[in-house]
Amino acid sequence: MPRFAPDLVQRFYDRSTPGFARFGQGGRTGAIRRAVWGPGVTDRVQAFHFVDHEIAEHARALATSAAPLHLVDLGCGVGGSLCYLAARLPMRGTGITLSPVQAAHARARIRAAGLADRVTCTVGDYCDLPSSIGQADLAYAIESFVHGPDPVRFFTQCRDLVRPGGRLILCDDFRGETSDPAAARALDRFRSGWHVNTLLNLDEVQAIARLAGFTLHTAMPLTPMLELGRPRDQLIKTFLALFGWLPLHRTRLGHLVGGDALQTCLRRGWLHHDLLVFARD
Image (cartoon, rainbow, N blue to C red; front, side, top):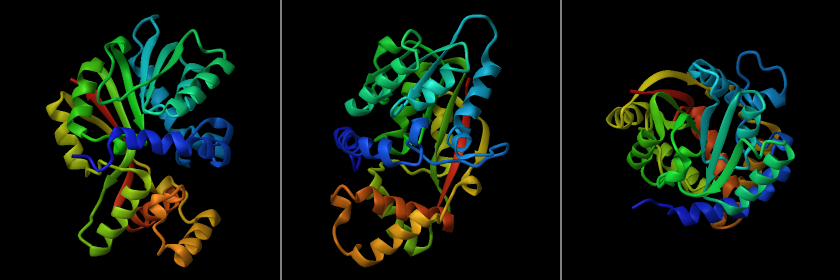
């Protein structure tokens, strides 16, 4: 049984999304995720769109005719990635999210960008995709794969979703070396604070992907490109040192506990943040 059923993940994002959108560093980019200071990035806006840029490059490589590509965002948040991609590619886009609150934000963003004729957002579960989505040339999941209750089911659904020759892209956290006893405690805090169900190492995720008809095409380590230990992170660490004995993971501050644990895991190599590109056989 998953630690966090889909309805609990939904409630987590229903409750947290307004604050993430208003106070998060992604700001107007619509990115509820981490900035990646990859090659060629010169400012914060580009850092929040680095992963989007990489997805766009893989999408362009798939374009073989004048017909628009179909891109599907598995865990689309408030639609920031879909809008970024649709503004730069001849495509139609479909987003799916568990959270009705996120879907409302995404639809408003899509309308404001003038993309409602090409981009849609629906409430649903990427482990139980509605047939109305149709087949995708490229599907991607940015920092949403870890919330899924069943990675085998995820890849099985993606096998039916992504056309042969298409691409599936995951950007998320994967387990590193965790033999240190302290790793288990930090990972548990991360799971609890961020409602995480799935933490696989790279060998495990590749094995599950192969069974579903996907082969790893490229893997890009992103951990060295992240911002770790920002002043904001240090303030949170100080706050948790004073009040961490309280059951904060059960409150609206639970994401702070999870975020602090994530920083620790990334710094010590217990987790790695990676961009994995799979080819549909």
